Length: 256
Image (cartoon, rainbow, N blue to C red; front, side, top):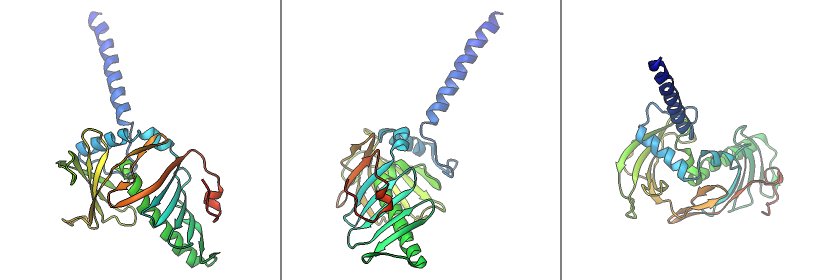
């Protein structure tokens, strides 16, 4: 009887510990298709720490509307929940309203709405490609465990600005417009925020196309975002709980 009475408390403690571990692991679940088996545990742990430092997975999932200006070239409005996106080309009067899940949309160009199916498809595809690129520049730290991603831990290495960091590598398989890309991402050991990235157009390239800082993080809603890439800037970053449907349905420029 004494042995049995000791067994049950130990069983309860074990179950509680297992539940605690499972809960901890589920705080930032990977997207379906993330290459967990091919990724380094240390790199995955860093990805989870980055998510927590940025505001946490729950707050990221609950963030719905994000708008920003990409390098002075485009203004984007994104409904994360529905997949609706508005892409305004700031160099001309082109506006694309599309849904990134259905690849359907409408196009305003040259002072009128386009009606030819081939033209609409062409510019909707361009709009989606713009969103893929421009949103990655803004929210990449939230996408470290996306579908098709493999993470490798590359050790400790200072950034070009002399900041301490731990370095991880991202490669991709059959995702996005350019799965042949590769990124290096540096993570601050103090803040657990990304403080630099490097982009390679080819995964087997030794020299990056660019190396840029991630600086000047600010809280938007309940999440952290950075638009400072050194010589390149993402500006007018805003997070909204609500936006009028007209933002994604009408070509008239929104007044927010």
